[in-house]
Length: 294
Image 1 (cartoon, one colour):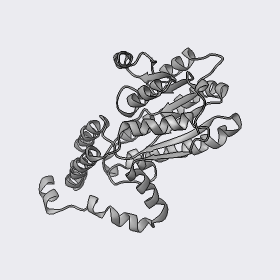
Image 2 (cartoon, helix red, strand yellow):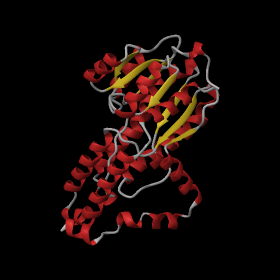
Image 3 (tube, rainbow, N blue to C red):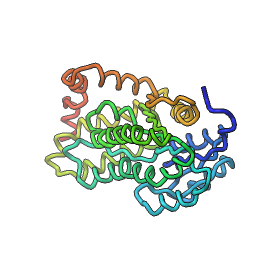
Image 4 (cartoon, rainbow, N blue to C red):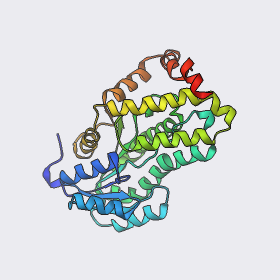
């Protein structure tokens, strides 16, 4: 069951709409009749969206800069409020945890966790006015941690916990909160993950980096190949977000893709030691990886 057509035209803000999942979501929701405000960090990205769809507008929103967040929320202040906030903006820092610098971890958490809270906090008065909804985009890694994606998983677990807290605290105000958990999916983020992973490894102390180089580089290549082979598409994620915003009874969580569903089931049903053994092949050097690390 979905909301009636009179609910179309309501305002929805989508962060991280320049590329990938955010861009597809913004265009999908605009085509469905929502008044979409696409949050982008550069005006050029917003203009590119406008060229593709006249049914949306854009606002400069850098989730790590609260001045841009406040300006965007202030521009939308009005008697109708804001119906939906899609917290999609995020980055992925991939590295062995031992190789992570404090600055790299802060950057991961500042964007995906603190930035999400800052945007939500700024828009909550408008969401209360509309009795609206928050949709937080996390990941399958918000349920199951994969080696070498520890920093990203830390952020996603925190975002899941934030979503649960918000959903319970905002229930009396009539503001709903849902989580959308995409699995592996090919978007421009994967090029950034590989480049960033190599940069983190290069910056780590050489004795530490040497321990991980072979298995980590193998992991990066396999991870990207898995994303390229995935049959899950950005449109699938956009459809889940659309349901969370338009259904009369939205779900609290939407796994998107078979791997996201499988990962949540594994984390819920299997003992930790068995899950640890499942990842043995990821972290165990082979003769080939040892030669590559030398």
